[in-house]
Image (cartoon, rainbow, N blue to C red):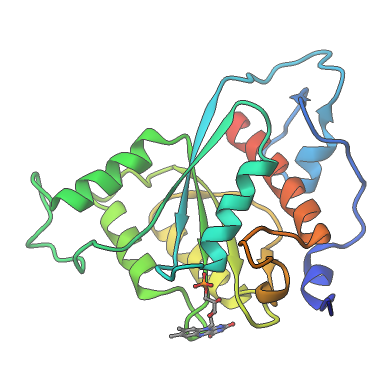
Amino acid sequence: MAHDESVDQLTDSARPECVFGRQRITRVPDRQTSDQLVEVADQTGAGMTESTKALTILGITGSLRAGSFNTLLLEACRSHLPDGVTLEITGVGGLPIYDTALDGDDPPAGVAAFRQSIADADAVLYSTPEYNFSIPGGLKNAIDWASRPAFRAVLTHKPSGVLSATGGPLGGVRAQGHLKQILSGTLSHVFPANEFLVGDAGKKFDEEGRLTDEKTRERLERYLTGFVAWIREH
Ligand SMILES: Cc1cc2nc3c(=O)[nH]c(=O)nc-3n(C[C@H](O)[C@H](O)[C@H](O)COP(=O)(O)O)c2cc1C
């Protein structure tokens, strides 16, 4: 099947190959890219300073669509996470449109549950479609709920990663830019990595919804390894 290299080229500049698995981090300076974080993973474990305690990541899909590529991408992440890391996946449907009159000490039940799921997670991993060059309104609405009360919301200082997938060739790069800007408004801490984009998503998943494109799988594993190392150091 035809494979459009353009999206991979956006993210696959020359990188050292690493073996993944039970990695231990010896030194992770501040503000590193995912590739740099992977580079400092030491397979021997000598001089380990980083904990390997269990982590929970909350995956938030920006799509409500049955068979959504973004939901499938989050599900694919489960096969590429390091040992001890669990990914729960949630959606953004069913929340009322944000209204200060509904917010306060007793927010709608769905809102309270959504906020709690973020509070319970060590980090959030978003996967978003691109709608009209931005993120879907439902995802923006969910983030608005999770961003309140300001400065002490569940998103405040929450380690966060961003993925995107679209049927078109650009993979949602414009939506990712918007999402990162929105997250900065919530005081979330966004993983500093090159955009992880899945363009032409219809060619990357099989009919059962499995991510079958080998190059995308390899990129995903690199991204997640760097993301988890960064969360642990956070
Ligand atoms: C309202 C709407 C607007 C869209 N706008 C864009 C767009 O600006 N850029 C793009 O690449 N794809 C656009 N798309 C296509 C979606 O990104 C594509 O359908 C994607 O697969 C949806 O994600 P999902 O598979 O997770 O549901 C749009 C789709 C919809 C429904």
